[in-house]
Amino acid sequence: MPEFDILSFGETMAMFVAEQNGDLADVSQFHKRIAGADSNVAIGLARLGFNVAWLSRVGADSLGRFVIDTLEKEGLDCSHVAIDPAHPTGFQLKSRADDGSDPVVEYFRRGSAASHLSVQSISEQLLTARHLHATGIPAALSVSTREMSFELMSRMRQAGRSVSFDPNLRPSLWASEHLMITEINRLAALAHWVLPGLSEGRLLTGFDDPADIAAFYLDLGVEAVAIKLGPHGAYYRTHMDEGFVAGVPVETVVDTVGAGDGFAVGMISALLENHSVADAVRRANWIGSRAVQSRGDMEGLPTRAEMSVEFEAAIASRSNRRTVTPTLDLGQTQIPL
Image (cartoon, rainbow, N blue to C red; front, side, top):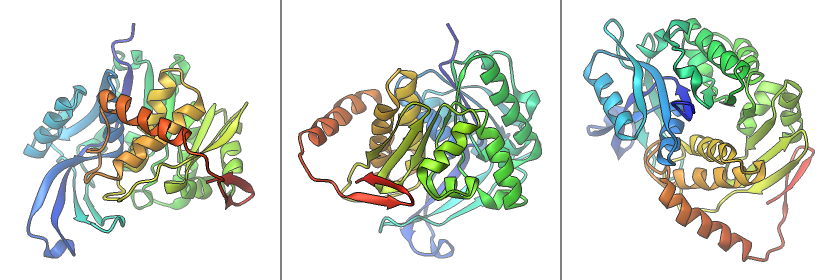
Protein backbone atom coordinates (compact mmCIF):
# COMPACT_ATOMS: atom_id res chain seq x y z
CA MET A 1 0.00 0.00 0.00
CA PRO A 2 1.30 3.52 -0.79
CA GLU A 3 2.31 5.53 2.26
CA PHE A 4 0.37 8.53 0.90
CA ASP A 5 -2.92 8.70 -0.96
CA ILE A 6 -2.12 12.05 -2.52
CA LEU A 7 0.95 14.16 -3.16
CA SER A 8 0.56 17.88 -3.71
CA PHE A 9 3.19 20.58 -4.00
CA GLY A 10 3.62 24.31 -4.37
CA GLU A 11 3.82 27.48 -2.33
CA THR A 12 1.82 28.22 0.79
CA MET A 13 1.99 31.87 1.76
CA ALA A 14 1.03 33.69 4.89
CA MET A 15 -2.02 35.84 4.18
CA PHE A 16 -3.10 39.01 5.94
CA VAL A 17 -6.83 39.55 5.39
CA ALA A 18 -8.26 43.02 5.95
CA GLU A 19 -10.73 43.34 8.80
CA GLN A 20 -12.26 46.49 7.28
CA ASN A 21 -13.58 47.31 3.83
CA GLY A 22 -11.80 49.76 1.59
CA ASP A 23 -8.39 50.39 0.08
CA LEU A 24 -5.68 48.21 1.58
CA ALA A 25 -3.65 51.35 2.21
CA ASP A 26 -6.32 52.54 4.63
CA VAL A 27 -6.80 49.26 6.50
CA SER A 28 -5.25 49.15 9.94
CA GLN A 29 -6.25 45.67 11.11
CA PHE A 30 -5.59 42.33 9.43
CA HIS A 31 -6.22 38.69 10.34
CA LYS A 32 -3.38 36.24 9.67
CA ARG A 33 -4.20 33.10 7.69
CA ILE A 34 -2.55 30.98 5.00
CA ALA A 35 -3.08 31.03 1.25
CA GLY A 36 -2.13 28.94 -1.76
CA ALA A 37 -4.25 27.17 -4.35
CA ASP A 38 -2.19 23.98 -4.19
CA SER A 39 -2.34 23.71 -0.41
CA ASN A 40 -6.05 24.64 -0.40
CA VAL A 41 -6.72 21.49 -2.42
CA ALA A 42 -4.40 19.46 -0.20
CA ILE A 43 -6.26 20.66 2.91
CA GLY A 44 -9.64 19.91 1.36
CA LEU A 45 -8.59 16.36 0.53
CA ALA A 46 -7.15 15.84 4.00
CA ARG A 47 -10.46 16.98 5.53
CA LEU A 48 -12.16 14.26 3.49
CA GLY A 49 -9.92 11.64 5.07
CA PHE A 50 -7.14 11.23 2.51
CA ASN A 51 -3.53 10.88 3.63
CA VAL A 52 -1.90 13.87 1.93
CA ALA A 53 1.81 14.65 1.61
CA TRP A 54 2.79 18.27 1.06
CA LEU A 55 6.04 19.15 -0.76
CA SER A 56 7.17 22.74 -0.35
CA ARG A 57 9.75 25.13 1.04
CA VAL A 58 9.41 27.95 3.58
CA GLY A 59 11.78 30.47 5.07
CA ALA A 60 13.48 30.10 8.44
CA ASP A 61 11.15 32.76 9.83
CA SER A 62 8.00 33.14 11.91
CA LEU A 63 5.75 33.08 8.84
CA GLY A 64 7.31 29.79 7.77
CA ARG A 65 6.65 28.30 11.20
CA PHE A 66 3.08 29.59 11.04
CA VAL A 67 2.53 27.98 7.62
CA ILE A 68 3.84 24.58 8.71
CA ASP A 69 1.93 24.63 12.00
CA THR A 70 -1.31 25.48 10.21
CA LEU A 71 -0.89 22.80 7.56
CA GLU A 72 -0.02 20.14 10.11
CA LYS A 73 -3.11 21.03 12.16
CA GLU A 74 -5.11 20.44 8.96
CA GLY A 75 -3.70 16.92 8.79
CA LEU A 76 -1.06 17.34 6.06
CA ASP A 77 2.23 15.45 6.26
CA CYS A 78 4.81 18.26 6.14
CA SER A 79 7.90 16.14 6.68
CA HIS A 80 9.00 17.01 3.14
CA VAL A 81 8.74 20.78 3.60
CA ALA A 82 12.27 22.22 3.57
CA ILE A 83 13.35 25.16 5.73
CA ASP A 84 15.31 27.69 3.68
CA PRO A 85 17.71 29.85 5.74
CA ALA A 86 18.47 32.20 2.85
CA HIS A 87 15.04 33.08 1.40
CA PRO A 88 11.83 34.27 3.09
CA THR A 89 8.34 32.83 3.25
CA GLY A 90 6.08 34.58 0.76
CA PHE A 91 3.00 36.46 1.95
CA GLN A 92 0.05 38.40 0.59
CA LEU A 93 -2.41 41.11 1.57
CA LYS A 94 -6.09 40.55 0.78
CA SER A 95 -8.88 43.12 0.88
CA ARG A 96 -12.30 42.52 2.37
CA ALA A 97 -15.13 42.35 -0.17
CA ASP A 98 -18.55 41.99 1.44
CA ASP A 99 -20.48 42.43 -1.80
CA GLY A 100 -19.38 39.12 -3.33
CA SER A 101 -16.92 40.75 -5.73
CA ASP A 102 -13.37 39.45 -6.15
CA PRO A 103 -11.12 40.86 -3.42
CA VAL A 104 -7.93 42.78 -4.18
CA VAL A 105 -4.82 40.70 -3.51
CA GLU A 106 -1.25 42.01 -3.37
CA TYR A 107 1.54 39.43 -3.46
CA PHE A 108 4.99 39.58 -1.86
CA ARG A 109 6.48 36.34 -3.13
CA ARG A 110 9.30 37.19 -5.57
CA GLY A 111 12.44 35.28 -4.57
CA SER A 112 10.56 33.39 -1.87
CA ALA A 113 11.76 30.12 -0.38
CA ALA A 114 9.19 28.16 -2.40
CA SER A 115 10.50 29.62 -5.66
CA HIS A 116 13.74 27.76 -4.93
CA LEU A 117 12.13 24.32 -5.02
CA SER A 118 13.85 22.12 -7.59
CA VAL A 119 14.10 18.59 -8.94
CA GLN A 120 16.44 17.87 -6.01
CA SER A 121 13.49 18.46 -3.67
CA ILE A 122 11.81 15.25 -4.88
CA SER A 123 12.30 12.12 -2.79
CA GLU A 124 11.58 8.58 -3.91
CA GLN A 125 9.23 8.16 -0.95
CA LEU A 126 6.89 10.83 -2.35
CA LEU A 127 6.69 9.08 -5.70
CA THR A 128 4.93 6.12 -4.09
CA ALA A 129 1.78 8.23 -3.58
CA ARG A 130 -1.34 6.97 -5.32
CA HIS A 131 -2.23 10.31 -6.90
CA LEU A 132 -0.51 13.61 -7.76
CA HIS A 133 -2.33 16.92 -7.91
CA ALA A 134 -0.56 19.76 -9.69
CA THR A 135 -1.37 23.31 -10.74
CA GLY A 136 0.26 25.79 -13.07
CA ILE A 137 1.39 28.03 -10.21
CA PRO A 138 4.68 26.31 -9.27
CA ALA A 139 5.68 26.32 -12.93
CA ALA A 140 5.27 30.10 -12.95
CA LEU A 141 7.42 30.78 -9.87
CA SER A 142 10.85 30.02 -11.36
CA VAL A 143 12.68 27.86 -13.86
CA SER A 144 13.64 25.37 -11.15
CA THR A 145 10.05 24.97 -9.90
CA ARG A 146 8.91 24.52 -13.49
CA GLU A 147 11.45 21.76 -14.01
CA MET A 148 10.27 20.12 -10.78
CA SER A 149 6.64 20.26 -11.97
CA PHE A 150 7.51 18.49 -15.22
CA GLU A 151 9.64 15.91 -13.40
CA LEU A 152 6.98 15.08 -10.82
CA MET A 153 4.14 14.82 -13.33
CA SER A 154 6.20 12.79 -15.80
CA ARG A 155 7.49 10.32 -13.21
CA MET A 156 4.13 9.84 -11.53
CA ARG A 157 2.38 9.20 -14.83
CA GLN A 158 5.13 6.82 -15.96
CA ALA A 159 4.74 4.95 -12.68
CA GLY A 160 1.05 4.41 -13.38
CA ARG A 161 -0.23 6.91 -10.82
CA SER A 162 -3.17 9.17 -11.61
CA VAL A 163 -2.42 12.87 -12.12
CA SER A 164 -4.78 15.86 -11.97
CA PHE A 165 -3.96 19.35 -13.19
CA ASP A 166 -5.59 22.75 -12.66
CA PRO A 167 -4.02 25.45 -14.88
CA ASN A 168 -4.56 28.16 -12.22
CA LEU A 169 -3.13 30.81 -14.51
CA ARG A 170 -1.09 33.60 -12.95
CA PRO A 171 -0.10 35.77 -15.97
CA SER A 172 1.81 38.30 -13.84
CA LEU A 173 4.29 35.60 -12.83
CA TRP A 174 5.19 34.65 -16.40
CA ALA A 175 7.67 36.39 -18.71
CA SER A 176 5.13 36.33 -21.55
CA GLU A 177 1.66 35.05 -22.37
CA HIS A 178 3.08 32.87 -25.13
CA LEU A 179 5.45 31.13 -22.70
CA MET A 180 2.65 30.64 -20.20
CA ILE A 181 0.32 29.05 -22.76
CA THR A 182 3.04 26.79 -24.15
CA GLU A 183 4.30 25.53 -20.80
CA ILE A 184 0.88 25.13 -19.19
CA ASN A 185 -0.35 23.02 -22.11
CA ARG A 186 2.79 20.89 -21.96
CA LEU A 187 2.04 20.21 -18.30
CA ALA A 188 -1.62 19.52 -19.01
CA ALA A 189 -0.60 16.84 -21.51
CA LEU A 190 1.00 14.93 -18.62
CA ALA A 191 -2.24 14.76 -16.63
CA HIS A 192 -5.18 12.36 -16.69
CA TRP A 193 -7.72 14.92 -15.45
CA VAL A 194 -7.56 18.59 -16.46
CA LEU A 195 -9.71 21.21 -14.69
CA PRO A 196 -9.60 24.64 -16.38
CA GLY A 197 -11.99 27.53 -15.96
CA LEU A 198 -13.80 28.60 -19.13
CA SER A 199 -11.76 31.78 -19.60
CA GLU A 200 -8.54 29.85 -18.95
CA GLY A 201 -9.51 27.19 -21.46
CA ARG A 202 -10.29 29.81 -24.10
CA LEU A 203 -6.93 31.52 -23.61
CA LEU A 204 -4.94 28.27 -23.53
CA THR A 205 -6.55 26.59 -26.55
CA GLY A 206 -7.83 29.42 -28.75
CA PHE A 207 -11.29 27.82 -28.80
CA ASP A 208 -14.44 29.45 -27.42
CA ASP A 209 -16.72 26.45 -27.17
CA PRO A 210 -16.34 24.20 -24.07
CA ALA A 211 -16.62 21.06 -26.18
CA ASP A 212 -13.75 22.20 -28.39
CA ILE A 213 -11.63 23.19 -25.40
CA ALA A 214 -12.15 19.75 -23.90
CA ALA A 215 -11.39 18.04 -27.22
CA PHE A 216 -8.10 19.95 -27.42
CA TYR A 217 -6.91 18.33 -24.19
CA LEU A 218 -8.34 14.92 -24.97
CA ASP A 219 -6.27 14.96 -28.16
CA LEU A 220 -3.17 15.57 -26.01
CA GLY A 221 -3.77 12.30 -24.13
CA VAL A 222 -5.90 13.56 -21.23
CA GLU A 223 -8.65 11.17 -20.09
CA ALA A 224 -11.20 13.63 -18.68
CA VAL A 225 -11.70 17.40 -18.80
CA ALA A 226 -14.02 19.39 -16.51
CA ILE A 227 -14.49 23.04 -17.44
CA LYS A 228 -15.66 25.34 -14.65
CA LEU A 229 -18.45 27.72 -15.64
CA GLY A 230 -18.70 29.68 -12.40
CA PRO A 231 -22.25 29.84 -10.96
CA HIS A 232 -23.59 28.02 -14.03
CA GLY A 233 -21.84 24.77 -13.05
CA ALA A 234 -19.43 22.77 -15.21
CA TYR A 235 -19.14 20.98 -18.54
CA TYR A 236 -17.25 17.70 -18.69
CA ARG A 237 -16.02 15.48 -21.49
CA THR A 238 -14.19 12.17 -21.80
CA HIS A 239 -13.49 9.98 -24.82
CA MET A 240 -16.78 8.18 -24.15
CA ASP A 241 -19.11 10.74 -22.62
CA GLU A 242 -19.87 14.44 -22.17
CA GLY A 243 -22.39 16.48 -20.25
CA PHE A 244 -23.25 19.51 -18.16
CA VAL A 245 -23.89 19.63 -14.44
CA ALA A 246 -25.73 22.70 -13.15
CA GLY A 247 -24.26 24.84 -10.42
CA VAL A 248 -25.55 24.85 -6.85
CA PRO A 249 -27.47 28.03 -6.01
CA VAL A 250 -26.30 29.98 -2.94
CA GLU A 251 -28.08 32.74 -1.08
CA THR A 252 -25.03 34.90 -0.43
CA VAL A 253 -21.59 34.89 -2.00
CA VAL A 254 -19.10 35.91 0.69
CA ASP A 255 -15.69 35.28 -0.90
CA THR A 256 -15.08 33.87 -4.39
CA VAL A 257 -11.40 33.04 -3.81
CA GLY A 258 -10.94 29.29 -3.42
CA ALA A 259 -14.05 28.19 -5.31
CA GLY A 260 -11.97 26.56 -8.03
CA ASP A 261 -9.86 24.81 -5.41
CA GLY A 262 -13.02 23.45 -3.83
CA PHE A 263 -14.07 22.20 -7.26
CA ALA A 264 -10.76 20.36 -7.58
CA VAL A 265 -11.24 18.77 -4.15
CA GLY A 266 -14.60 17.41 -5.24
CA MET A 267 -13.36 16.08 -8.57
CA ILE A 268 -10.24 14.41 -7.24
CA SER A 269 -11.85 12.85 -4.17
CA ALA A 270 -14.78 11.44 -6.14
CA LEU A 271 -12.67 10.06 -8.98
CA LEU A 272 -10.28 8.42 -6.52
CA GLU A 273 -13.33 6.77 -4.97
CA ASN A 274 -14.30 5.45 -8.43
CA HIS A 275 -17.34 7.64 -8.94
CA SER A 276 -18.32 8.54 -12.51
CA VAL A 277 -17.06 11.81 -13.97
CA ALA A 278 -20.60 13.20 -13.91
CA ASP A 279 -20.97 12.38 -10.21
CA ALA A 280 -17.52 13.82 -9.54
CA VAL A 281 -18.59 17.10 -11.14
CA ARG A 282 -21.72 17.17 -8.96
CA ARG A 283 -19.58 16.86 -5.85
CA ALA A 284 -17.14 19.43 -7.23
CA ASN A 285 -19.89 21.96 -7.88
CA TRP A 286 -21.25 21.48 -4.38
CA ILE A 287 -17.90 21.96 -2.64
CA GLY A 288 -17.18 24.98 -4.83
CA SER A 289 -20.53 26.50 -3.83
CA ARG A 290 -19.77 25.86 -0.19
CA ALA A 291 -16.39 27.55 -0.50
CA VAL A 292 -17.86 30.86 -1.72
CA GLN A 293 -20.12 31.08 1.31
CA SER A 294 -17.20 31.41 3.76
CA ARG A 295 -14.62 34.13 4.24
CA GLY A 296 -11.16 32.78 3.54
CA ASP A 297 -9.58 30.65 0.85
CA MET A 298 -10.12 27.23 2.42
CA GLU A 299 -12.32 27.79 5.46
CA GLY A 300 -15.45 26.56 3.64
CA LEU A 301 -14.01 23.22 2.57
CA PRO A 302 -16.05 20.44 4.25
CA THR A 303 -15.05 17.53 6.40
CA ARG A 304 -16.13 14.04 5.39
CA ALA A 305 -18.92 14.10 7.98
CA GLU A 306 -20.21 17.47 6.76
CA MET A 307 -20.16 16.32 3.15
CA SER A 308 -21.99 13.10 4.00
CA VAL A 309 -24.86 15.04 5.52
CA GLU A 310 -25.05 18.27 3.53
CA PHE A 311 -24.15 17.05 0.05
CA GLU A 312 -26.51 14.09 0.16
CA ALA A 313 -29.30 16.39 1.36
CA ALA A 314 -28.58 18.84 -1.46
CA ILE A 315 -28.66 16.06 -4.07
CA ALA A 316 -31.92 14.70 -2.70
CA SER A 317 -33.47 18.16 -2.73
CA ARG A 318 -32.51 18.78 -6.35
CA SER A 319 -33.72 15.37 -7.50
CA ASN A 320 -37.13 16.00 -5.95
CA ARG A 321 -37.62 19.23 -7.91
CA ARG A 322 -39.33 19.14 -11.29
CA THR A 323 -38.54 22.16 -13.41
CA VAL A 324 -38.28 23.05 -17.06
CA THR A 325 -34.70 24.18 -17.52
CA PRO A 326 -33.55 26.79 -20.05
CA THR A 327 -30.29 26.51 -21.92
CA LEU A 328 -27.08 28.50 -21.74
CA ASP A 329 -25.34 29.31 -25.02
CA LEU A 330 -21.54 29.07 -24.66
CA GLY A 331 -20.50 29.17 -28.27
CA GLN A 332 -21.70 26.11 -30.16
CA THR A 333 -22.46 24.05 -27.05
CA GLN A 334 -26.04 24.44 -25.81
CA ILE A 335 -26.12 23.34 -22.21
CA PRO A 336 -29.08 23.24 -19.79
CA LEU A 337 -29.07 25.54 -16.80
